[in-house]
Image (cartoon, rainbow, N blue to C red; front, top):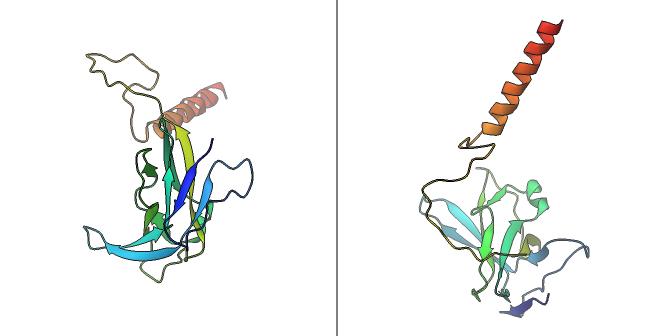
Length: 162
């Protein structure tokens, strides 16, 4: 698949992959600006000075690089979504996860990875009933609860066998 990128300034760095088998293209920060969110928190806006033409039927997903663990940052929307019709600058917004001087990415460093994935065409259909499943309506933490219940049953069985 060919993916077209447009440099919006002479500072833009074309995306790279460290290995041929990497899923994502590493993007480099060209500048960092700040913005105050609705809660009054300082946000760091990382710019790439790049625009991309994602083919129709695909979406671009911006994930933090694995090196994020060394930084005191969190990407504010967890995963950025770039729709195929968007032609503006690729940016990502991060917030500091500490009240002391944060460890951050600097201009010139790779900071996110762009993963291109196909998206199915979806038709939304209203239904009176949904099919049954093993999980049913079990929500947040339900798999932890099931594991704990299973462990308790196994421990009880082991005690009774002893």
